[in-house]
Image (cartoon, rainbow, N blue to C red; front, top):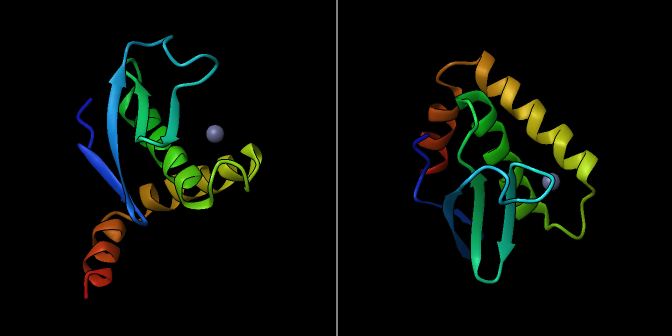
Length: 99
Ligand SMILES: [Zn+2]
């Protein structure tokens, strides 16, 4: 799976690192804030990989300690479906946010 090399969230640049499946106990992704790094399992199908990366980005945005796992799941799953069902929307959004 080809991931972005890094994801900028606020003032931090999180390196995106693939690790062998099973190296992240109990899940497929993890975010660390110091040093900033998002770790993802290397055995996921593309749809799952996108969801997991978005899930970890949501943790980065809302901070692991101030938002519970269920809320992160709800937002990440909801955003994945909106992005999937609206082709071109993510690119449109990114383009307009640059202005
Ligand atoms: Zn989580």
